[in-house]
Structure formats: structure tokens, C-alpha cells
Length: 417
Image (cartoon, rainbow, N blue to C red; front, side, top):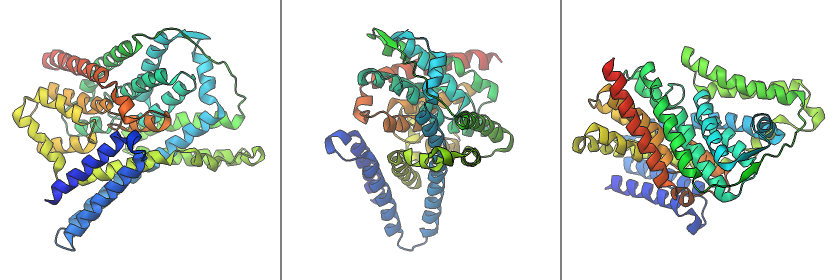
């Protein structure tokens, strides 16, 4: 009986996010309340019984995962907050963008930039930088919305073919379901789907954008910190591949280096303390993450996620993988992937590649389905679950095109080899 109550709580939390504009209650408050309340009910039900130790262990694991994400976000968002406040991102636009560019060209430029950057960096960093670039253009809200939707889809698509780009991709690789070269085949379908979405979003767009060539005067310390940021991204990837060092640890080290360098280069004389930039982080985002991941951890504990795998018993794997991708827009894709790997469902390499794409990109269908979406919602004022939902058919079309192309390429090249 309690399991059904807990699932109902998760549904109410989702409805609280969906109807945020109607209820006028911040989504961080509703998810945090329901997330903590659900775990409290679990402990009351355990009542110091034989399952208490297991419950406590699961909560500690859940909190550990959340703290890892929190600390990573803290470091990445501090870097971006500093560079954005100093005008570094705007200066970068001045270099790579023409004086004038049509909106249609701009949307394709944004698609390629976000896709490529997320292949080099993690999804959260890529989202922060891409959204900062979009917001610096000063577009009307309805146009900014289209660019924001595109950024979320492009960022999620960019990292799906690399073991350093997406956690679920790494999990599937470590379980020996796919090889690195097979994963690289996902690049073409993923990029094609992103460009297809850009094409759909560009319909009806007219006019040109004048890029404001405002030159921000930068101090030597600003250039050094930008270099530290880029070095942190590169070294994070290398350290993770060579030594399995968690990205969170590398980014915290990079942030510590930033603090020390700023201090040694005399930040005090500029009356601009480097630690103050942590205050520029929107902690609503972090609290929202906390609430959502507590709810997902609770669902994982009561095996509600494992129940979703019954779809493989009623559908062929190709169709079931597609559905799992759609479900990942409502449920975190990491426990979803872990549940499938644990079940050890028999699938061909081509089907595992399709699953990798599905859970990596499917989260883009809803704004709460990925970290990229949640970060974007926190940065673009006025972007809500409902407003993002208006683009769900376009997103579903692009996701379907990418999924179909993955199956075609996987069957052609993997079967042939």
C-alpha cells in the first residue's frame, strides 16, 4: 500500500512542476517537500525493523549521488558566472560572429556550437555556456524560447556518442554492450537529428540579428581564469579516462586553482572578491535537483523503476528502447539504465546502440528530463514546463529521426563488420 502512496507523491511532485504557473509555487519548493516527505514515510514504515539498515544505506547512496552533482554544479556555475559577468562570453561572440546574421543562420550556428561543445565538455557546462551565449544576443522571448529548446536537445545529443559525454553511455560501455568505435557511429545520427530540429524551429523565422560588438575591457586575471576553465574541462576528460577521477573532483580542483590564482594576482585591489561569485549561482536550480533526485532515489528503492522494464516483455526491443527513451524524459536515465543492465535483457549490439541514443537524448522531450533542461529553465526567465511542452511534437520528431538513423547505421556497419 505504501508503494502506491509513494508513487502518488512522485506524481504530485511532477504535477506541481507542470502547473507551477497556476499554483504560483516555485518548483524547487514542491519537489524538495515531496522528495523529503517520501523518504520520511519510508523511515516511519521501517519502524526500526530489519529493513532499516538497507533503507539507510539506500538513502546515503542517494545523497552521495546528489552531493556529487551539487558540488560539480557549484564549480561549473561559478566559472561561468565569473566569465559571463566579466563579458568574456560576449567578447567571444564578437570574434566568431559577423556584424549581422539572419535568424535562420543563427539557429543552425547555435545547433552546431552546442552539439560540438557538449562533445568536448560535460552537459551542464555546455548548457551554461550555450545559454549564456543565447541570452547575450538579447532576442525577444519567443525567439529565445526556440533557441533554448534547441540548446537542450543539441547538448544532450552531443555527448551521447562519447563515454566521457554521458553517464549512461559510460555505464553501457563498461558493461561491454558496445565498443568505443561503435559508439562513435552515433555522431552522424545525433547531429542529423539536431540539424533537423533546427530546421523545424527555423520555420517562420525572419529577419536579421545585429550582434552588439560591445567590447568589454578584461584584466589579465580574467584571461588567466578563462584559461583555467578550458584547462579544467580538458583535464577533467583526460583524468576521467586515464585514472577514473570523478569530474566533480577535477572541477572542484579547478575552482580552487581559480580562487588561488585570483588571490595571488591581487583581486583585492580591484574590490572584486572572487568568492563572491558563488553568490551569483541560482540555488533554486540546486534545490530543484535535490528534490527531483530524492524522488527518483525513492522510486528506485521501491523498485518502481524496475517495473517499467515489463515493456520488453510486451514489445520488441526496438520499440521498447524507443519507449524507454521517452520515459527518460520523466525519470532520471541513470537508474533507468542501471535497472535494464541489471535485468540483463538480451539485445543485439545494434539494439544496445539504439538504447544508448534513446536514454541519452530522450530526456530532451521534457524540460525536467535532463540536467541540461533544468539548468536552462533556471537561466531563461519565463521558461516553464508548460511553455517548453509546446515544442514536444517537434522534439519527438527530431528524436524519432535520430533513433531511426541509429538503427539504420548500426545494422549497416555493425552487422557488416
